[in-house]
Length: 150
Image (cartoon, helix red, strand yellow):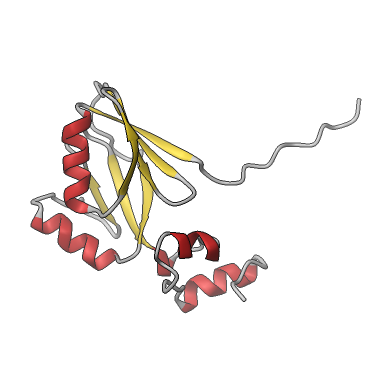
């Protein structure tokens, strides 16, 4: 029998976070970040991230995350750090900018300029972020993979 071609993972369409209350979650995240609400109902809300989205789903019951987390890309990491501080959100110890939301979801904030993750130019333009660029380290990583912006 011939080996079947494996399907490649291309990225994320969305991430779903369980929260205690949709309105409280929108207020918490809206106090930290500028975002467009795609849609919502009593049990879910969808935050638009250009060609991706973050789904907030009512019903978190498990303990707070420890190592399990996901990285949210932001346009300005230092402004995000300041927003967390001003909101009274304690950052977690370590090298990265991690925090727990009120429901125990662990989130790492990473700056767009410093990572391989790249939005297509037309998506950035549509998000009003065409001015964003990568630093030398990120361009080097992308170049080594044949993915550097032209």
